[in-house]
Length: 334
Ligand code: NAD
Image (cartoon, rainbow, N blue to C red; front, side, top):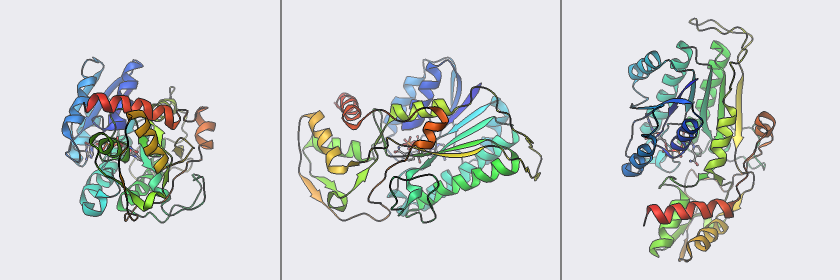
């Protein structure tokens, strides 16, 4: 087994790469180390992967079609865990092209690499944002998700549709994962946990959107990594009618799956802030603001399908997760 992880300088990609290496699996990983947020944080993550001899890092932009094709040809990869993307809901309103390049063109380049190199399984990141304005709680994979409210969400839904097509047409087994607000050590500085912790640490007023009437199914990073690890097929899958021939339709198509991967316990934003304040031993002023364009009021994952597939659902509750996150935050941002 040789796994390609994309986005290894990123939050989730770094943790997944490290876990695979700790399990003794050979990994080639890529990232374009873009400056969407602090490059030093990305470099610090990558630095921790350097001591592993079974790891090879390649700096590459996934929108580079020839670069991605060469990578697949040269590295003899068997499985792909595709986590690189232009993330962030709010940023997608200002910078639509970054999402088209990384999330659409990049995703198609990965699918093509998988198709032409008989990759055994592709796991890729989708997002809870595909549920958009869906009000049926908790969110189930079978709920209608035809109304994404941000460009970011639209690109993630497009990733699912494109992957479905490759499973069906070319027999590529794919698993899409709808992540729900992931947090933990080495997290993303553009996301609420680090923004909240920074405001608390610096005694700055903290912006709380939708006047605090928001809840999120915060999911601790270790639970995400465990879920992904369990979803990697450890034996070659039996896929009838595997075909890499151009345009050959495949009636008995390969498995196409999409799973929610979230804690399953939504938490009010104010409660999450209180947990960070408690862990950091301080409080700060809150400024209550209106809802931001592209945001949704609540997220909540139904994880029954994930449990049926891998006998596992996220376990770390918000108190324990925030404590571990705050310890890391205090140390890193000392
Ligand atoms: P991240 O921004 O920390 O990591 C993404 C990495 O991908 C970054 O290091 C970035 O440099 C890299 N990247 C972006 N475009 C690239 C390109 N064109 N070529 C090569 N590398 C590129 O984000 P994350 O939180 O680790 O998210 C990982 C995946 O999970 C993303 O697909 C994201 O959309 C998805 N997701 C994350 C969350 C969350 O709560 N963190 C929630 C839902 C979905």
